[in-house]
Each structure stands twice: as C-alpha cells, then as structure tokens.
Amino acid sequence: MKNVLVTGGCGFIGSAFLNYMLPKYPEVRFINLDKLDYCAREKNVMTRDNYVFEKGDICDSLKVITVLNQYNIDTVVHFAAYSHVDNSFNNSVNFTVNNVVGTHKLLEACRVWNRITKFIHVSTDEVYGEIEHGGTFQEKNAILSPTNPYAASKAAAEMIVNGYKKSFKMPIIITRGNNVYGPRQYPEKLIPKFILNMFNGEPCPIHGSGVNVRNFIHCEDVARAFETILLKGRVGHVYNIGSDDEYSVMQVAEHLQRIIRPRTAQFIKVEDRPFNDIRYAIDVTKLKDLGWTQEIEWEKGLKNTVEWYADNSDWFN
Image (cartoon, rainbow, N blue to C red; front, side, top):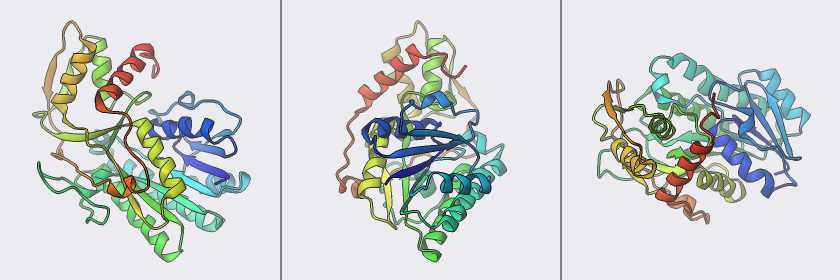
C-alpha cells in the first residue's frame, strides 16, 4: 500500500476514512477522485503532504486510467456512489448509471492498468434486504435480496465486482455496512436533518409510523474498520461493518431531543417511501476476528455529532 486511490473521498464516509488515514500513514500517498456532487465538499478532507485531490467522475474512463497511471496506483477504496434511498425512487436511472456503470468502468480501468494489489468495494447492508424484528442476523454468504432502487443498484454493482473477481482474478474485497452517522454528513440523512431542524425550530419529518429500525455506527469506527480490512482483510472475502446500536426513527428523534433540549420539538408524520424496509441486521463476527471493535458508543457518538453541527451549522450552505 503505497499509492491509494479513494473514489468519492469528499463524501461523508470517504472523507472520514481519509481524515483518519492521512495523519496515521504519512508514508502512503492518498489520491482522492471525486466529481463533487451536491453532497460532497472538498473542504471535508484535511490538507496533508500525502494527499492529492483530483476532480473527476468514475464514469469517465479516460480520467480514471490517467489517474491510475499518473499516480502509479496500487490500491483502490471505492466509496463513490449515490446513496440517498429517498432520491432513488424518483431518479433510479441515475443511481444505475453512477453506482453500476460507474463501478464497471472503474473495474475495467483497473483491469487494463493491471497493477492493483487490493480493491475494496464499498457496498451496503441493504443488499441483503429486509429482516423482520427478531430475525436472524445476515452473514456474508446470505442471498442478496434488495427491495429499493438504491439497494438494487448496489447489489448489481456487486455482481459485476464478483464477475471481475472470478473472471480476471482481480484482488477484490467487498464490504457491507450499517447506517453511518457523525460529523460532515449531508443533512438529507436522518440524524443531521433532525439535528438541524431542532436547532432551527423546524418539525422533524417521520416517514410512516416511525417504527422502522436501523443499526447506527459512528464514522470513526467505520474508518478504523476500513483500515483493518485494508491491512488484514483477505482478498476474495466479504466483510460486514456494523454495530449493535439498533434504534427506530422515533427513538433516534427522542435521543436527539434529550441531547439538544429544544424549546419545542415537533414530529410530523409524512408519506412513507413506496417501500420502507422494517429492519436490517448483519453479523460482524468476521470483522471482529480481524481485531476490530466498536469504540464509540451511541450516546457519546450522538453527542459528538450534535456538538459538531452546533459549531458548523453553515457547513453545507
């Protein structure tokens, strides 16, 4: 690991990964390829001597192969993706283009370059599909059964990734993660949206009944998980990244209300998604076997996140 290409590094999870890795590995050069879509900010990533930013789209094959060659890339961590589920119901084709075609073009460029020693493909726990309350935690070999356009695009991308792993013997590792939260997350997502709405005295929208549950994991724990997988993960394997912090939408709202203590906190029921999974649940034993553990517990992480938005409420203006 000498020259690492990070796609989508100006986004939420990608920037958390870079901000963790850059000071810790000064001997490694990190090249961030990001097209700076609406939810990404170049300022999300710290400036370091071992960091290079390249503005570009993974769908631009010439740009990708140029970057691979110019910086002699040996490792790829592929975060770039459209990720907001709500948007995928109205703009599903764009999700296919960016998440599926973009991943395919990136893989093909890496195949032609033929000098990659490890390719980390970042997927999501949503590819497993819905799990009922009390249902069995999904292991890495479970059948993929996505239920919304976003999850379907990520599952489709995984199929292409697996094809390149098998057909071209590319050194690929797949990760599937829980909902991530923390500083610098674009406020279309649940936690930052509720935080800023409470700050501004605006109502917090609850999709449907608000009983849908998700597991939440802090972005710093996720960054350390990717570090662990980069250093210790086995090529050809799948690793789930997650926590035991499982809460419903209403519980998240109530926890934030206790931390922020707004004068008034209004929760309004809005029309639910066309399909809204009740729950996801993944088994992270395999990641823990590599030595990773969750370090930031829910209350601490949520307070840390609220404090960041209190100090940076105009970050995305």
